[in-house]
Amino acid sequence: MNWFKFSAPSTFYPLAGRLIPWFAALAALFGGVGLWIGLVVAPTDFQQGEAYRIIFIHVGAAWMSMFIYLVMAFWGGMGLAFKTRLSGMMTEALAPTGTMFAFLSLWTGALWGRPTWGAWWIWDARLTSSLILLFLYIGFIALTRAIDDPRRADRAGAVLLLVGVVNVPIIYFSVQWWNTLHQPASLSVGKGSSMAAIMLWGMLLCTVAMWMYSIALTLARVRTIILVRERHTDWVRALLAALPAQNSR
Amino acid sequence: MHWNSFSDFLHMGGYGLYVWGSFGIAALGMVLEPLLVARQRRVTLARLARQWRAERLEKTPEETTPSPGEAP
View 1 (cartoon, each protein chain N blue to C red):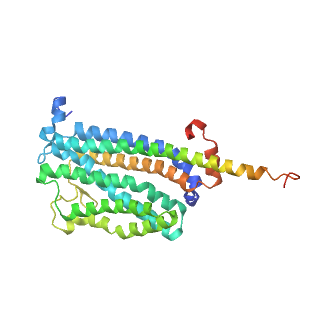
View 2 (tube, each protein chain N blue to C red; view 1 turned 45 degrees about the vertical axis):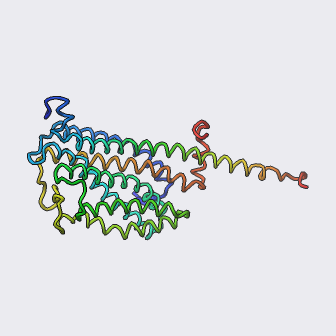
């Protein structure tokens, strides 16, 4: 199978359209089960009471905010190295969803920090580097939208992404490298999980749901971006010509 | 089932504001974002189709006028 075939916008456009309903359905399925476990089945935490239930949103949102940034940096690097047209479209499509999850991770973190630490916000390593991640997303969107020529915008954005990617391991390891108020990872590759199994399952299912959601949203957004950027090509013109009139007032 | 009553569930052991404030904003974001993306798609498709038709109208007369004998 030739994967490079799908890096052509004209072949990726219909593929993305076919994939969206599947990822949306998976997001709903995993999200439904995850929320049921997280809000209804999982017992009270013996230390934090019910406040710990914020974990079911917070961890997934924080992971997605870091993961989406890594994916954007990957596409940015591909764009700089191979000049593929799809890369810039993918970074543009991923940025808003990444921004939303970066915001959600900070917001839920504040609402969790207040009852457990007694503070909405502190300038410790984990929280500060997460705030920088949000600013990187906003900076990327502002920078790429400020440049009119899409190819130059993509290049500038890719450089910003690659410079900023150093922040992701800083976020991830901040709880080990510095003495922070933030608790260490509940789940790590070497040590396994420090959580009760049912809580862990709820958290993982919510995270997978957010992952599927991000893929569905990104595919939906990139389809519109492809049409805009490829509007002078024959296949987009044929597609526009075939649109029913009431759809295109 | 972990809860005794629905009000128990809403109360969240006294942490209702924090827990529902988190789940609420997450739900709001994950409902609004798909709606915005869908609206953006509708608006963009309409704009591109309009531009395409305008371009075609501009081109058509030029392409059809030069017929032999009629040229000035």
